[in-house]
Length: 241
Image 1 (cartoon, rainbow, N blue to C red):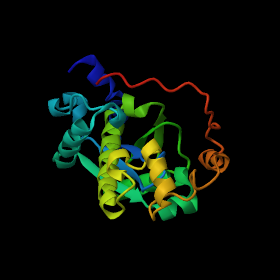
Image 2: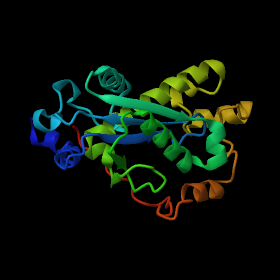
Image 3: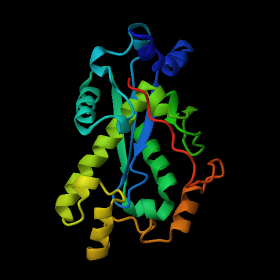
């Protein structure tokens, strides 16, 4: 297998080499939208892949944001039906998001997904910074969905699950365009809110329903997180897998 494919299994392989066979990648989707649930997924690859590498059907797997909808659906099907891959998906609804805040709701979804995996994962690879509310030993990887195939797989499952839910919500609450923008803050979405007002799946703790300053405070609620800076340079895109 090409070096770049091995490299994206290096974090899993290091843990497998230490005897930790149940290593889960975990990621979330839906922290930014104005509406809908947040989703999270956990994926455990077989430790035998330390010798064999990633199966050819999974070549091209990457951060879900770097894949188009067709590619995400393809990988979702492969990951969820592969006999050697263990996976779990969880969502946290709008009511809980507004009650906790979006960060803690996302972490709750991650814990719920991980708790579905039996036997329990021995170690977790997480995208971004360390999550002190995660009830598992963990390794935090900045840009982890670009650097770890198991995190990338989790990002795909979470993204596809949430997108499918938003398509269903579009049927329940027509006129907002949820099937198109999936609840994100697009001009069409803002125009629909202005015309129709909020619907039951809108996050009332988010702007435009709540002052932006308060929303930013919620995102920085954990002292281990750096303060959000709207002028900060964006992170680079993931390279192709």
